[in-house]
Length: 283
Image (tube, rainbow, N blue to C red; front, side, top):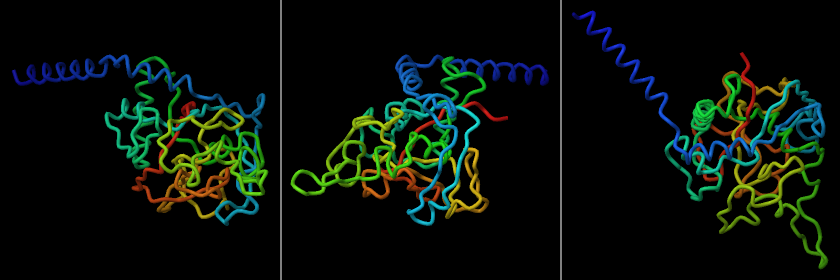
C-alpha cells in the first residue's frame, strides 16, 4: 500500500509539474516576445558590412583601455536594437524595479545576477513560444561583442566621429553627442523611451549613453592577456564586473566606444541596465 501510494503521488506530482510547464503564455507577453525578436539586429562578422576583426580599446584613453588588441569573430550573433524595455522585463520577471517608470523606458535597478536570470527566463519563454531554436539562447553580450557593435565598423572615439562637440555659428561649443545619446548635458528632466535618438551605423540605439550596460565579463584592470576571439573574459578572483556605454548621469568621455568601468556584482542603479544577445549555445 505504501509503495502504491508513493508511486501514485509521484505520478500526480509529475503530471502537475508537466501541466504547469505547459501553461499557455499570455497573449500580451507573446506580443512582447515577438517584438523583441523583431528588434534583433543580425551581426555577421566577415559578411557584408560587418568586418571580421576590429581593434578593441584606445591608444589615448586610460590604462584600462590598453593595450589596443585585435579581436576576430568566427561566429555570428544578433544584438538587441534597444536596451531591455520595462514592459518586457516586467512580463518576464513579474516585477519592474525601475525608478524611472515607462513601458518602453529602459529597465534599470537590477543586479548583474538578475539580468542573467532575465536572459535565462526569456530564453525559456521564447522556446516555449517556438520563437527560438533549441540550440539558441539569449544572454548578455561579451565586452568584445559590445564594443564591436558599438563601434559599428568605425575607428573613431564615437560611432559618429571623434568629436562630441563642435563650435557653432557663434563660436560656442555645440553638442554633436546630443543627437545620439542621453548624458548629463541633455537628460535632466527627461523620461525617454528606448530609441528616441539617432542609432549608430548598424541601427543600434543608445549604445552611447542612456544607461550603462552589463556585459558577461569579469573586470580586469587592462587588456593584458585579453581574449581575442570575442568570448567573455573570466578573471579568477576579480571582485568586479564589466559595464559599458556610459549613462544619463555621465559626461561625454564616459560615452566613448572604448570606455569601460568595473562595478561590484551587487550594484543596482537607475543609471544601469542591459541589452541582450541571441546566439547559438556552445556545448
